[in-house]
Length: 94
Image 1 (cartoon, one colour):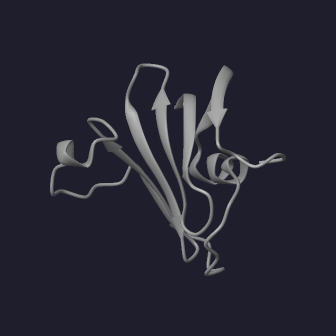
Image 2: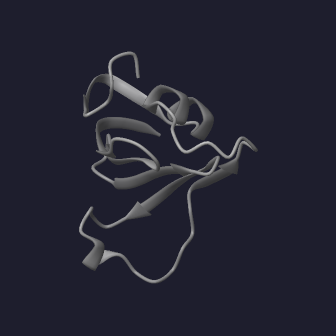
């Protein structure tokens, strides 16, 4: 799955982003205590999220860390940035 836009919504722990795929699907990306997850939701508006929790991807890297770069997150989750993707709020080198 390719990401065309990613916006970092938390500058520290947890690392999290709002992201949109090439087909317009919204994804919530989150990494906290070494656990990463990719969730699909209707939009970034929490009022549109249902009570069910079925991540598209989830992992525990065993580190207990709370910070990860978008580059590392995408590589671990299997997501990629589409050519010309927009990334906002990511520190340089991330």
